Image (cartoon, rainbow, N blue to C red; front, side, top):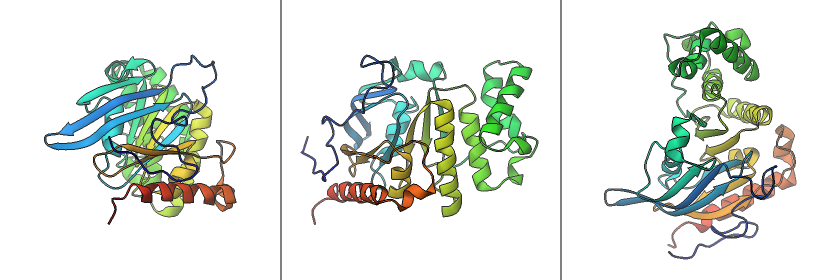
Length: 283
């Protein structure tokens, strides 16, 4: 494998900064996600090539890179929606397949994917209903989650009565219905206007703080990745490799809009952009 260029402050793949400090529970705590030597080919096309990545419990890690670099493919490999051609993925110490069967993760995509014929509460309850949870317990859990995402007053509305941002909040609530330890998010705010997007970024951090879940977040936006993340994983153009891992040091995980105006935020944005430029092929 060819060497990767990095930028000051970024850590090359496989280097000492690949994993964050151990989560509470000591050095032996099992990581939330372990990706070891993952390759994924689609026919003659290699989408992912030798991916090694460890994500600790409670971290929020963003994946960023050029279009077609395999960010979404990597997320789907972790979710057991796509099988790796080579390599291994473990989620909470289990195989990705076992973790999917045990509902250890929730997933949210760019399209909210709500069912129009169900109410907002009914959409949140759906995963619980599919897994045989009783009606009273489903309703109570839906109430808890809609309150968490600020939509308690909209429980009986239909999705078409909600704005795009509100629909995404319902989708996040639904992804959390079964109390997953891991939340996988594939550009969930990508289709929203900037103000709504920034508001939902702050709400995602509040949800993370309230639930303690680990989040893996795919995005094309450098400022979004920096605002949300403990670390930003920069991927190279296809075949996708981990080119650099940029730690984000903005203090508390419960960040507000004031963080965006700080020198530390600006510096992290510069670091991530430099790491992205370093992945470009020489001209």
